[in-house]
Amino acid sequence: MKKALVPLVIAGLVWGCVAKSGSNEDPVQIIPTSGGNADFMAMFLNRQTLIYNGDVWADRQHIISSRLKTMGCREPRMLGERAEEQEGTWAFGRKRIVYYSEWKCE
Image 1 (spheres, rainbow, N blue to C red):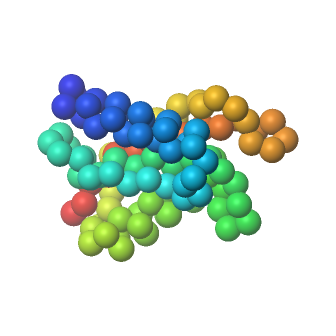
Image 2: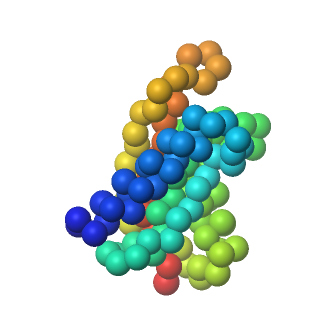
């Protein structure tokens, strides 16, 4: 469990820097992990577009799964997910949330 926390903390710090800089328009970040049960850690910002809604679990799962498949993962499987509220809001006062999930490749 402690080994899994280190990549989560690092990923959170990286995500915070990227989110505040505004230079990255991609709402999904996928980072390979070392050790533990998970092969990848994904961070998904709850942005809403015409194509998907970041607050909908099925949209997040589909997008992350598709990206993992393009990275060579045959059958991606989500191990777990948690949400963390960020500073600021989207248009119309919607809270900014980052969804962290761990994924295993079969």
